[in-house]
Image (cartoon, rainbow, N blue to C red; front, side, top):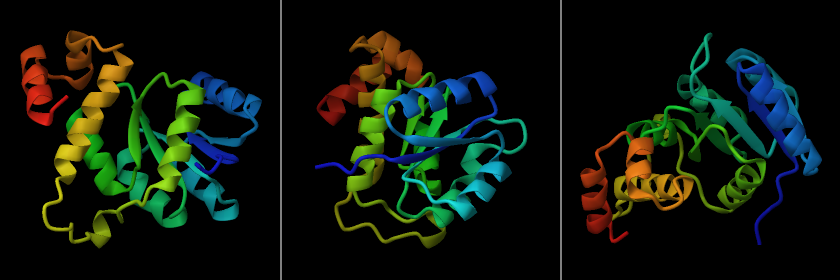
Length: 184
């Protein structure tokens, strides 16, 4: 049974996107607050914890990737989702190393976001890069991240390999080889 997301903080510089997502979450019973900058979001978390932090990758005054460790430190138990319109596998890997639980592409569906976040809260999260854990022997963390990014791109593209390859920023043939290698 997944834990329900009851509170959220949305950190994004795009006013229209931020308020639209806030409204969608509120209609689903989530108390959603917003912040237009990285610093504004950090201040908000100091006073009121949340179950979910949604942070944009590219913002004019500080990118979300460099702030992930600070957000994770303030909210160790929250699901942290990085949003981007520019997703690729290296970015997904970097985001997870810095403390994000997952990377989703914009625009994001509120129901999908809540399902993913509730599921993430059930899984055990690795610590951010500052406290680098020793992975268990035989762990294929990078392969797992790559597999998950490929699956997400295939879901997003409706299973069309050529479209998924474009979302990932790789050639279609490369994606086909990776699918074969990963057993997808």
